Length: 107
Image (cartoon, rainbow, N blue to C red; front, side):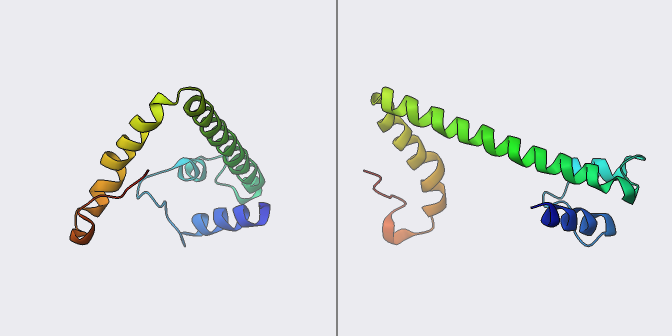
């Protein structure tokens, strides 16, 4: 993982890659900083990026775990969640598919 992140930082530093969002991200800010812009401080950037990745993975895991717990505990919310997924997530992507009438049976 360290080698992957280090290569990612080096590619960004050299200009081979840019932020996927088209805006400045955390790495862009670090590389623009006087202290972190020095190649000898790259190890600190790599460590910070790995820390953020691990922290995000843990919070996502916790959020999904809590969601599942509450859906099991409050079964009446299951149908509401399915309906929201249908109308807010699935239907907008299926409007062009006339053969399925923009509907997917989630039950």
